[in-house]
Length: 122
Image (cartoon, rainbow, N blue to C red; front, top):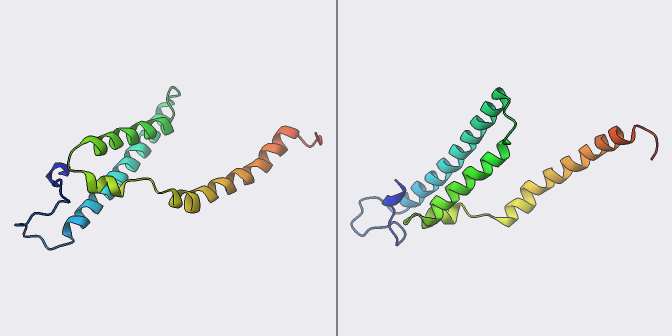
């Protein structure tokens, strides 16, 4: 499916598709890839939890799967549009993802300090 996109943006002069349909297809492929990765990583996490497997953490498996898909998207010809949609956006990370992480760390810090200090004041 991904190989059907052409090098020059996926548009052919003799295409019967209206303009804009190819962009929708590329967006749907990108969303499909992301949801598939999410589903597979959740599935692996469930399997590892049920099997009580402690050799590999599920975040490592998610990282390896993401790197594998990234390599495929990077080196398979004809995936330039998908590559542009799957790029890392620093603003999205800094404004949407990082604040809840920092808030959660600060919230849990109080619990850790109370547990480690045991109320001894030191």
